Image (cartoon, rainbow, N blue to C red):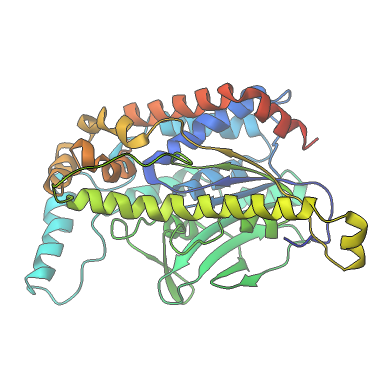
Length: 383
């Protein structure tokens, strides 16, 4: 973590992935707005998003000149979400188009491989209609925002690419399996970053197809640090440091259980490891006298990190709202075991329905207010 040249304190916001689980982030941000003495002032100079968190990050960047309005916009969208706003959920879109293509490919009836399980064209249409991404550069130019980054995973290169739009002091970076690339961010970047593997189609950007940014993202916090943040608020989509349950089962796991486990590994494991890494580096830096560090040319800095994550298991919350999904989606999920309690992890990523989203918004809000003192100290430290 080397100090960048521009050295004014910058607060970063990191929004991770998780499909419909990203509604939790909105609840946390809602509480942050309430705790601010000036809610219209954007407290986050740098915003980094991955997967569904990329969409929330872009929305906040578009409204960086009015944080209050940006948060209200997110609340209104997420509280009124329906699955058909995100992906085709009609019987033709689910069964005749997607499922039939998979079956035809497996039976070698058609030569081309199916692109994805679901068609998320409605999400792209909604983003183009509701987000004026041109305002991102306007907010950067006026100083309301310093930088926005959207992380995607390249299917050919295997690299984690953080596409960013930022101020003149930002320099592109390249590390093992991860790079930072300056560009004018478009809806295509948001669609690529949120393309859940197997479920939503990859998106071609320049010469490569990209998918969900959480894949191969071994250091989720690093984009914010490369962009100049020295303190970051990280909002995750799963519980941290949970004791594994004692299991004694002879029942073979369903396809939904295996898929849900794989998605949890993609979205949760690398974040936990990166948080531990930053804490370890901070401890090491605290043991090195500043004068000795300067003599040795070690331009290292301590990173203040606050992590907000759900206090309850989201998969259990999801089981209460599975019935809100369209009949055609329930039919598809039931076939792989995702409508049962053991398979609800998979369903939780696709549960873009009002009841579930509102429950997660409320959970995020309550979790943040329960840690009110910590959050106030963090927000106050950026002044």
